[in-house]
Amino acid sequence: MQIEVSFKNDKKKVEIVDQMQSSEFMANVAKAFKQKPSRTRIQVESSDAKKIYLTPAKPLSAQVSENTRLVLKYVGPQINYRTVFILEYLGPITVMGGGIAFSCLLCEQLYIKIFCHFQCG
Image (tube, rainbow, N blue to C red; front, side):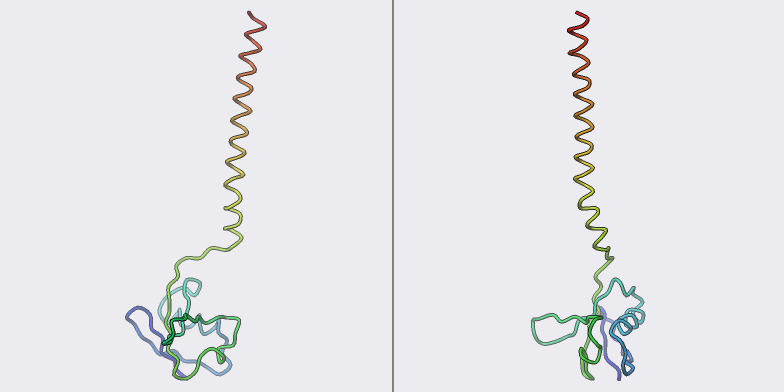
């Protein structure tokens, strides 16, 4: 079975083999349009306003049929959620650490000035 997939102004027919997994199909489509699979999503073109995307978890046969039209979407570079989590919490920790270090340094300088003033003078 062949399904028509479009990307920008380009249209191609992609072959679907029986019992093909969704993830394998998505990789083949991305390769056909010379895109990285991690930066693309495949949307099922429909007359509804609701956007339906192919998911690797579901079987391909449950998501597409013979006359389904698909649209390849470029979503750009993606980063892992763990990276977002680490960066999100690392920022405030470094800011607080820098603030504490600065305040300790400032207090030490102030303590030396006050101590010298009363001892020396």
